[in-house]
Image (cartoon, rainbow over all chains, first blue to last red):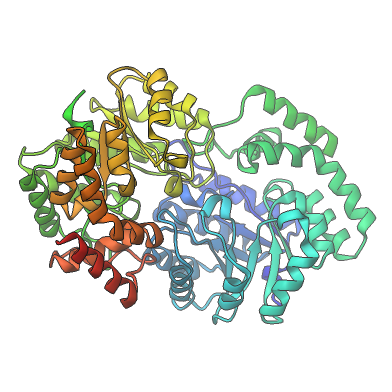
Length: 297
Length: 297
């Protein structure tokens, strides 16, 4: 299994101005921090990277700035989600040409898609690039729900190498991983997003943590990852406990909105979220500050 | 209440080629048919008009072609849904400049939006145009659910003149209309989409039927509308019964996909749906053909 879909994958926000123009210098600053911290990979233009709110030209600018800042120090995965299959294919080619080493493909939906349509979408994008592709499974945003059977089917597609899963019902990581391992190739990587599930998912044998918080706070996220990878359940639990107040706020307000508060705390210039998404109010900012104090960052 | 948000509003598909380029001649053909049939308004670039799959330039081309074909015979509402507030504002200005007389605004979402964010989105778009605006409430596609309280709040916004509702739980049109009438201005129009709810919603006092099927089959949809508007429950029920086999298929396969089958039957050149959305298989085509036979079109 490539390191690309293993360990800690950090998802940085994408700094833009009010018109949606990417601040390439700020992208470079964020990527440089992540490379210096030693994350296992970067997931550019994920949901946290506001891919859905950026047009093709701005996405290209973001990828070019990130590649330049990373300068080969860390593998770069690029999200290529789009409502039209043709648009996703164009974005995949752009990312490949820019030097990305992997792609993230969400089944972004408006009209609710059928399984048959999603299979054809993944085949078309996987067939348009030499890069390995990670299925981006996040029903809350994409409005599409993968069945275990569909994941099994897609995992047999050449080029489809990994899946980023949402947290399972009842936090039954072992059960879900067991089921999915049965119907996917041995080399197929299964990782999780939803930062509050990082410790249990890695301890249960998840291959990767696709992390929002690591996009801005890579060090504690790396400590948690390494403890869990070493099977140090107590160590992982202790770091997870330090994160707990932040996780509680992520669940209520959405992790994306709170990244803008964390960036302010770190004096990182990531601009404002793309309207209609708004910054949280002063009361929530104060709660996030307290959670960051608890985390000692 | 303007006729714009009253009676039968027909939502035509938008014919495009495989690259998403709008076939303006075919748009004209569809709009001309609807104007000739005498529908009360046209809802261009709704979900059926695949707005989510068209970029700004193609939407402009579609609106221009529709305005030219309508030639003042029928009021034109234009959907201006977009993930970014700034994009929706641009589309609203484009539509106003092209001669549309009303706008349809869905709370199109990727990141799940808060009520506060949706209010700001509607304020921004309503404030950018002189045109009256219809709230496009369709949680199945937009991934946003309006509460009664939020509808009440938005209905007080200058420029927000109407709402297109999804079918209510338990088909309780009278109950829902009663609740909404209490918290919205007297002039605020409340209509329904979901073609199988047309007869009961109009008979219960709904102001408008926002109709997918009328986009290609305006005549029987108009007969149903006029019967219901006249309070002729038996007449409306008889036409509704003729549609019933088609409604059953709409519910299972999504009305959008079946519009391509209906267009083939009528020899109307609407192209293919935008991938990843696919045409239905031969078995479903045969079932739609039978449903159209039942409808005698």
